[in-house]
Image (cartoon, rainbow, N blue to C red):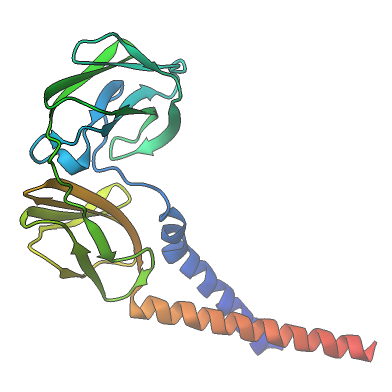
Length: 264
């Protein structure tokens, strides 16, 4: 009986150990990890990734406006914008999220976002200005109806478990003029490198990661964010061992219960 109690105690300790060292990253894998910590308060017009390299866009394009305010600031009800000096257009369908203890500075803020969809634009240069809460930000772009999209597609990694190495494979349109990947754990950059094609990433510690891949070709730039988990062979062995031990303990418990039930 004493040996059974010891085995159960060891199993519980292993489960707690795995939960602390591995379980928390598994939970956090769904959280997005921005590349940089924003200034608060501030406003930013997000330029389309597919055209950030050379400034060209098609006759229809979407921008996203980000407004960062302190968590205790009054609610923001609208964001407005003007295209080429025309009258203001108000956007009231805002999405808001809150962040606490964000980044190395551990700041807390609210992020308001709104999409600006521009269609049937004329050829040539344009200027977009966004306004909110007494702040403004602007961007310029050029419409070229013959503009092509780089169309980046990351084949691997996927949203799954990896052990010793993580393969990075991707497809794109055109010829690479510049490419780079960045890997974040939480809000900390842990790995980055220039790319000329597919590669394999080694040496990542156990945990959850966000990867950002940027590729620029003669057609412009495109990007993708991928989330994945690294679980080394030893950790995977411990996890399987704990699972097997837990299943065995559960089976023994059921067996003892049914024996007592039959006696009664």
